[in-house]
Image (tube, rainbow, N blue to C red):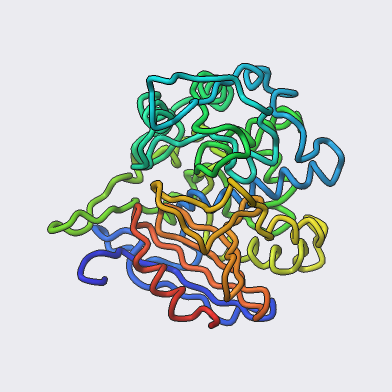
Length: 365
């Protein structure tokens, strides 16, 4: 596959709410020559974030919280955060935040919380890297409550609302969902989103009975080709006690995730089941960044074409689109003007070449 760079990929296109095409090519498991199929169970990483945003916005609709609410209302440690006075100059130390981190800041990655995996320079990113909050394949290394406590002890990269930094915001939101709903995150998502949408193969771990539909995660080493970085037998996603990561924890199938995307395309409704109001979906999929929050920066490099809604990246240029990307090499984009949904999911860690090529080939111009 592509000169040994791709084990397999599943792609799909839907137009006007109808699935026009869905197919897989290549292998789920290269060594054992297990074919990849549209119902293969795959790690979807950050494609988890829109699902979590949907859950948060359900609570907003119900009046359980508002986007302006300070996170410290439920997580006291957020009242004691510190901010790097200048993230590029460690000698200046930290200062108190000028404003409290809000739910909105978490949903838009404008809180100043980081991840620790980006190559962007700065004290904050280095602090997160040293703290080791995520493992080498991005499973969380601490339970959610412990993870959030550790985040509270790390500096923010900037004053809340004064920049954009991809970080563990949605894992904090996952913990908040548990606190506010009184349910485990997996239980809440199953009852309120996954079961109503018929997403029967989506969850935080792969049941033993379905292990044959789950494969290794691969990475590409230059000059060597594919190598396994997360084998099935040792994968955190095969453990029932896996930490429930709101930022990157779900496994799903292309069939399941396409149903989620079609619900978003349908204004919060699919097959007569309403998950969110149409106005809420419109808000989530509209760029919410302005002023110093713009532009979005990846690895410290600005992307002037991309803004951010709640859980979704949003194009601020033509053609208008919104969607998300996972570090498994997967992505989904919705083009509302043309009423098209495009999905591509691979299992190649940090390699987007195959999904980029498919999106470019079929996306509306």
